[in-house]
Length: 548
Image 1 (spheres, rainbow, N blue to C red):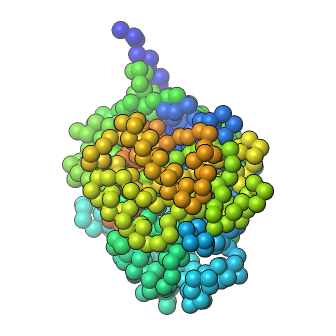
Image 2: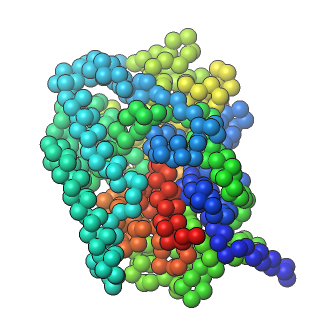
Image 3: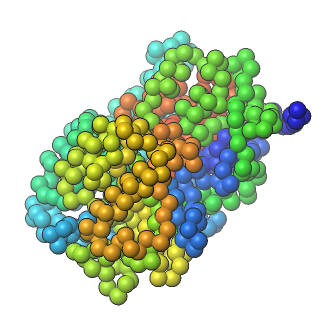
């Protein structure tokens, strides 16, 4: 047989399994602190789900993740990402909801535009909207304080831990109480956001469609739930969490696609001395007597190290890469019962013409305000509920909820002149189907046609304009990007799987039960989105545990 090659690295060389944005960020901060780091990426390119790929010649798709706004400003500055080519393109207007009756709702950072547009449907709602945004912004700033720090280790109260660990957990809980008290008049809204359905919250503020449905889509992004499910209110905060160049509530495109973020991080990492290996498939994370000893690659090659950081999902890490016998049973039970269900299909399209909406026609074939932001193909809340109910029986939605973006309307670098990139984020398409299979190409094609047919109702001629397509079902998202169950967040973002319960109760500090093994991906606190906080926080914990 083929002789196995064993590479002996210095024991202080860190191995990062997976070159997604969080893995690259952890690697960068470790290298910045003087550590040797090697990133091992299975695919031909780093970036994880934040990549730009030219699937159709001449068209650059942000193949999975498609909008920026959560990336922590501290990371942008500390890793000098602008110097490495990162450029955001703010969207204004940022939201367009077409209607079949000829009306539409156009919204964005311009308060006067919002007031004028919402007034078409309800003058009361137009007055309430800035107050709603103000309260959500205040609550969002409360949560933002927790993004860049470890969550309180509540496991310290349930296990045999030192008095020091119990004291730290108590102080962390005290800080939460103090910060919550500072919310003042927004405190009832905070409690509601944490527990109530999004629809209940929205209907307390507003009375009109399509405003309610447009805002409600923020509560279901990437999740297999509806706005009527308790806890969906928490995800509404994404509406105001987007920040671009210091401006709140602004979500942006990235010049050249989302790969612009991860390529900038990779360049920064290399400048700091990080070694990046692509086409390197880690098949096993090796342990001995409860300690890390390195990794085994596909083909048998072993790389030894006493420090391994996994950017893979917790499920993949602990059920496929690590020997389960090396893990405590309570921990493994939590990992195996984490909710990874997905309701998402992502479709990337190459178009030879802009969508021409009946309610807001295209002028001279050039992009207009209706093309710049997120286009919500979903007129009312009942549409969302019916689409969700279909998924409960293991079926795709008969009339799916569709969010369309056209980055080429603002970024000419991603498509040939006169052509356009169209990105569709579609719900609901359950991970597990009752009567069909995602492995069936005919069913997949039929599902895509269902989506195109709905868009055609609002923009006749849309189907004819498609010259290339990349359809990614939950199974594709798992197989291509390693997203367990096709879940874009490395695990659902319900309150039972956040903060001190992410990835498992008692293990929220990026450390794992195995000495020398850490987690840095979106399956850790604070969770999914191209934020980078997971990677930065993990690096801080690793450096604290492993001082020079």
